[in-house]
Image (cartoon, rainbow, N blue to C red):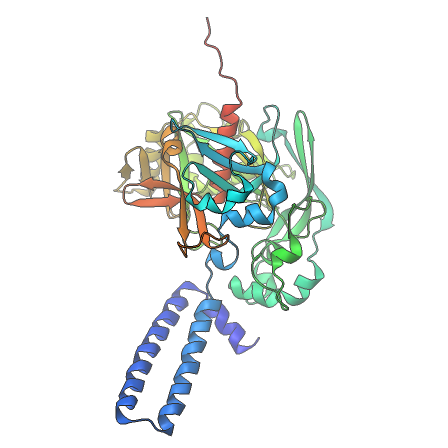
Length: 466
């Protein structure tokens, strides 16, 4: 491994990155001071040599800072308008929320010309009533399906990287994800091959894969391969998404579940700043990767229910380890989780994800009490109807009143050049304001909320018993 390659890996780690920034600023300050002093003494050959040396070293440090950045915007666009343009043939599948004049939010499947005319697409950054996700619907249930109606089938096949990425993309991938060798990311994942829908069952077939293959194909779409072609241009250029059984990216399955308490509180973690995606953003109650270990049950079969129980034990252990508060075994309760649908996330080149909703017979007060007992925390922050608590795996956890959440969330945009509203010139997101801060909703949480709201809109209200 070359010295430059090794340095780029080392300085992409947070503690060394701080040292790199300190060195850059210190070198810049001392260099400018020394050059200024030499200018006062007069120009000579020594001054020219020192100036060139200073410029080269400072330039190298700046380049190292830029190339070792792990910010998500270095890997893919955060501008929703970019995806509306790149995948313009998929407008009928985009997920969105629209707020009407009364302040109520409606879930949309598909963006019509009436909602957002194509010639006004660039103005999405200024719209306050429309929150468009960066995901498209892949399949939507027409009847009520539970998590136990989702069937997993593992094929005896392995996903293979496209040869051009396997041959030329290794260096970029390892440098961006703090790896020395490709086998540093050797977790076994379930890469979606295809799916089949029936009225009372939804089946997904998988190939076996490695997490590294996902990093190599889904996580660096706007990075350039040697020659200038981006990963997206090679793998999923648009204007339509490839069918999953012909798609080139690895496309392992993501799973997310939104949990609601019996008094209308949605359990929403805040992710830490050290994750590969959605740093510091709000996420679904439970979310994770479909891999061989988390999706395998005690009988050796691969199921979505096995994943849900495993992730519940890891991400919300204070609930998982308190079965005495539930009237039924947790396994039986989790098996009632409602299947909301399957999406493809455009930001990560059409990565598939399935979403669920699980109501629990536990109150917001009980959730906070259980957490308090499990951590002996002395401080629980209350933000109106938002209750914030710390979490040891995520950086925090909110229990948010459902109605309050839908009434508060707002579109948010950061336009780099306010005089120009060009595509890919802004960061578009949906935020949940709370006092002096506003948390960004991750793409997974936004999609989960849209599908949940769509389910509510299309579920008949039960007539009261006479």
